[in-house]
Length: 360
Ligand code: SF4
Picture 1 (cartoon, helix red, strand yellow):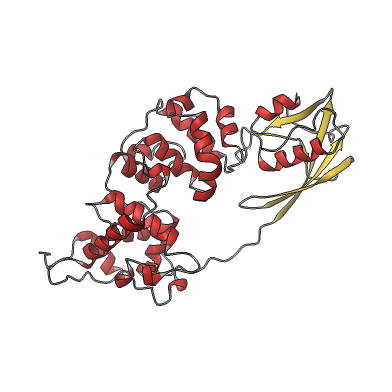
Picture 2: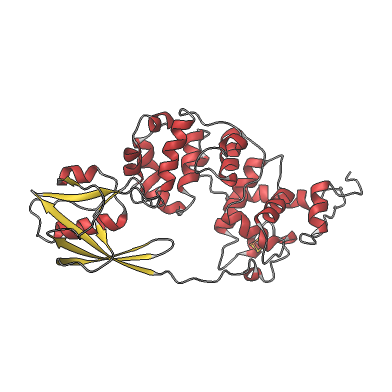
């Protein structure tokens, strides 16, 4: 039987007036327990068990999926990136033996390249063997609290809740909160968490967020949490929608300079796109033959690049240039904008022997 006094963690939430009281049924089972039973049954029946990272306990494969899925949709990761990356790097040990450039090349097209750089650093730091606890995982580059807990739970059975975007949305609605701090969200997750079935709770919550508690059209009638969900009457009110910021357009000239059948590239040293190869660029207008205009959307801006065939670079241009032929350039890691620029240049007919370079 439950004692009269709420447990300490429950008290905190009750004091904040955010989540309401826990009631018991006739058998003395708390509403959280029964809610979790329903979530468990729903997950067993409707969970996305077919996902390849659900069918393994290999910490590396789970870690890789978690990192890829941080900024990319499941379908995209599955269709284009997860398996080819594993084919190239079947173990974390194999990542330790590769250069950063090779890892970036395998990541090409997936974007948010700091993930690949951090994966490479992590592999080296832990010698190809991931630690087992979320506390230790959290110390590795690119692994935040929720990711650390997900890896520790799915690979090693650690019993702690995770808090990804799907879980957050459910919690906002379940507790009818329009706003909440990260700390409060963690408390809500702890409050609902099922320590007896951590794997199913974490996976079930993620699946519920991905398939029923959808951002635009939540399917509350089918939801196993509906009985206790305080926001189900007006789910779209929770959380408060964020102000939409318009993405600024950044205009640049992308300069294609040829010498002896080879094209000039630079290796980026900036945090954004660090380690990738790109054509020299300038923000001002620069004389040259226009080959076309490319657009590339990033999280914080849209790049509009005029691709120019040029004979020289702007005065005062800084940075080390290297010249590459078609075969070499295919092996280099390049971002989406530069792959598009390369495709334009190759298809323009203005560069001999470059026609067969195609964007992958
Ligand atoms: S009842 Fe509706 S709003 Fe509440 S968790 Fe389920 S799908 Fe989301």
